[in-house]
Image (cartoon, rainbow, N blue to C red; front, side, top):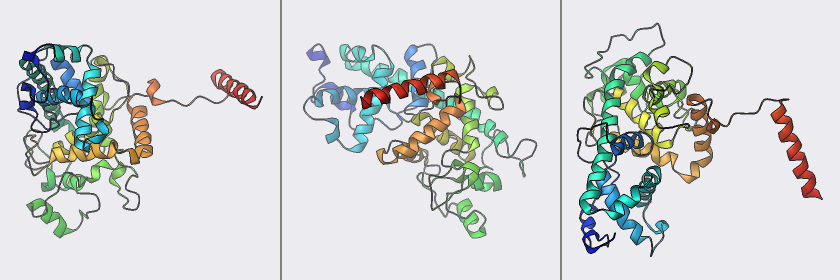
Length: 352
């Protein structure tokens, strides 16, 4: 920063805010929708990182930029590297943000973080509210009814208290049809951690312990949830298309991100649960651990091949007309002939 008052050195005022990880939810505050930073926070939380303490993210991020002049980011622990990636993604996604942060005082940085946080928490609250009732439409095939019926406004009869939602939330590899297992889950005697992924994450709710990647994060309920949030609720039963009123269209979103996939999975899981309030400290749903565990997998370099295939599949399902969906070229088309001719010319040139 430009003066002693705005000092960002390790001993400066920003250090006070960096004691804990920024990638954990901060205090909940009511959101407003008019400020550009609030609007950006809504989209960033949905698509990049949802459970974030933005004031802490910004203050520690600025300090770390200075520290990185002497040591590479690879020298830091994995959680710090992720936090820095989120920070840099935020900086890159909002033109002029870094200049505003480095030119302002600590109070300015905190205020900017609070505005971003208001947007992210507001969007999360809005989605939690609307998915609460919407998810009931996706529990059984169209034309069928859920028996016994579930309330749209009260969630106490969901989770492991209901046969349908219980089967969907049952951890992969656990036999929901076993009476003792079912009772243990219902009573809470068997606690389910966030990293024990539920059956609804798998296509057709079919889990193969010999091939745990098979069908993972390809359940149609996730598709419905994604469309509901990003392309508009009315698009769930229609052809995939980002409507002009949808969040994806408003923010120029043309591909599914890892963060958005983890976000939707977390929201659907919570909607199916019996918990009434989304909270990172809720040990029953353990939502924050669940969200982090999904991102851990999607960001793991060793899983890159499967992740690329998964994200391509998702983008084709949600944004089929986007160039990011990598559409295949029709055989015998003029374009395919041009590509074939160009490839042949390159091959001959290489052999010459």
